[in-house]
Length: 572
Ligand SMILES: Cc1cc2nc3c(=O)[nH]c(=O)nc-3n(C[C@H](O)[C@H](O)[C@H](O)COP(=O)(O)OP(=O)(O)OC[C@H]3O[C@@H](n4cnc5c(N)ncnc54)[C@H](O)[C@@H]3O)c2cc1C
Image (cartoon, rainbow, N blue to C red):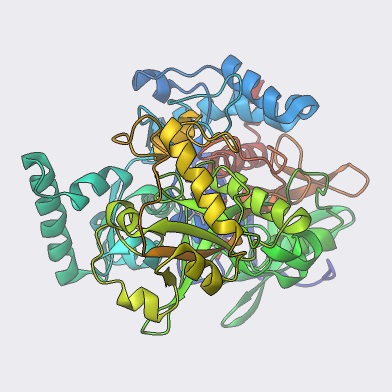
């Protein structure tokens, strides 16, 4: 911990470390509330994991949900959270989140360009009392990247695996038209519009400027930060916090020109994106099978959490899970790029696919949320049979209709994927079992059983297709169960999937104003932690879409408001 007597190079009111959703919200709100704000970002782009995300925020009881005709209430959300969290549902941070959420959305809508809208259907992830089908999860409105001019290049691009035609973003609502452009006139004109815009973009930009989801959210925050006069410094990383007694009074930053010591009048906000790639924290906190892959950008390496610990903060450990998980498949591309594909929702819930462990048995409702899918992988791995990796199994018609991982629907020539051993092919189920190293007696029986369930429409083992979420991601044309259809004649295919983290839930212990707590439970004056640097208010559960960025924005706002002295005005 650097000595307080050291000379400071600059002074500011609020120093925010990390430019993802949490840090940028804190910086923006701080500046709007009259603070002098410095925002430092380790990489040369803003956005962090947020820029590569779906950009959904889970904020119950919003005016936006009423406006969309899918009103949500705080009461039903509380019922739902009580069903998930039990006694922990009365946590004061959770209370603050629920109370502040709608206020923060209105604040942003009125004072900034950060706008959200509620799609009619976006179900919660658990089939429990109080679950919402729509109105609780809101999406960031799209953004025209051209408005940023030269600064457009400062937005972290989405994951390459999620773009098409060398840099065009595709939203969920674009997919039906792109898959069947000639089915209807509307599809045709939609696709034509997308292609024309993208072709035009590529004459002036390195990628498409029609920004969606997390990329749109980041672009909106970035544009506003520039407008609000935040002192934003790229390639400037937190090295150490500076303390005076128990209080944090600044930080030492690492820049290409050397160290920069910043004195803060109102506080330091840690927003460096959680555990990320920190091998020390992964080893300490994650189960062995979940350490290998992370969906965090390389610049997220646990810096905020580790610096917080050195300043007497503690990591909350008594959580249901230390990470929030996603199954990923991995393929080395021809140009050497290692594509890591997150299986969010495009294939797992579709009828005709099943997931098996090394014993050739199913271990999960494949159509459940990505977090629940991997939680089941980790359980199987610890208690039954290896799932490192597990395999997604299907027939040829499944790939034609829905695609699998990196293989897009309708792909005729599978050679590239077979050559790379991304896709494994077997003429018979037994041959496939042998190639992927699972029990060759068991796999045919597992598939026969699955096929029987497809006929009756009832998955007696795992209830696939029984929840709103399952059916939302299934295939509406498949009856009676949109998530079940028989696996037909060979050849058969498998893709290996591994556990990875899309976010960490174990972070620094904070209070309802996002202030970091010391080992003895007292507030560390001058230190805030938000986003994934703070421990999850949902305690390592994943209630619904947007339950990471929702709290990241709400507590980013709370931290800045507290530093500016305005939190009580809003929350009483
Ligand atoms: C594919 C995918 C989809 C997802 N979709 C959703 C979704 O729709 N809704 C949702 O709620 N969650 C989603 N998530 C999770 C969500 O994206 C993250 O939990 C959230 O964006 C984290 O925000 P953050 O601000 O805490 O960190 P980040 O957005 O990761 O930002 C952290 C920033 O800090 C910078 N940084 C790191 N170290 C330092 C340092 N020492 N000094 C200065 N800067 C530093 C990093 O470079 C980075 O820019 C998704 C995740 C993935 C991978």
